[in-house]
Length: 167
Image (tube, rainbow, N blue to C red; front, side, top):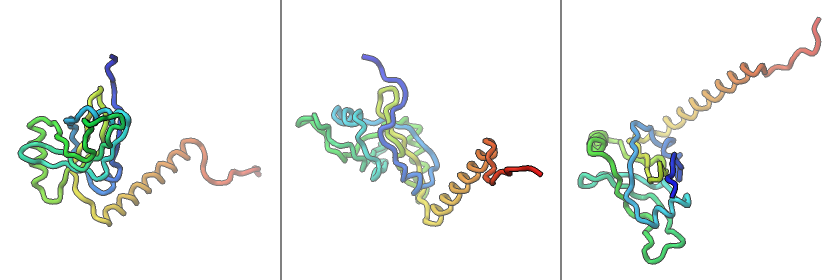
């Protein structure tokens, strides 16, 4: 059997980057059952309602939906069960320290296979207020406009009507 190489993204939580300001990102392994891995290999998962929490010195992922494997039998998994995340002890201690600040939470950003192993990216995040979201949208739009003008300048298009004749 050929070993998989590289990174294959299964699911992303794009709304998390809009709703939260990301402070720190960690990569974690996951404890999964066989039918969960097969379902993930088909590219089926949703991170929308997911969050991570620390219970009894262990990191757990909750609310992530991995649908049942269609070819599974009575050994199939429940779609929204809590799943244990695997991190080093020093990373767990960092997470515990960062979560002591009020207003911070652990949010999953993306779920992927890295060299054949299922991994999840979780972020220490702080919720944005509505005005912060509007400011971020304005800044992104301004950056796009600047990039558009710069690309026009480098391609030789000025955006104005060219002279058809000279005096």
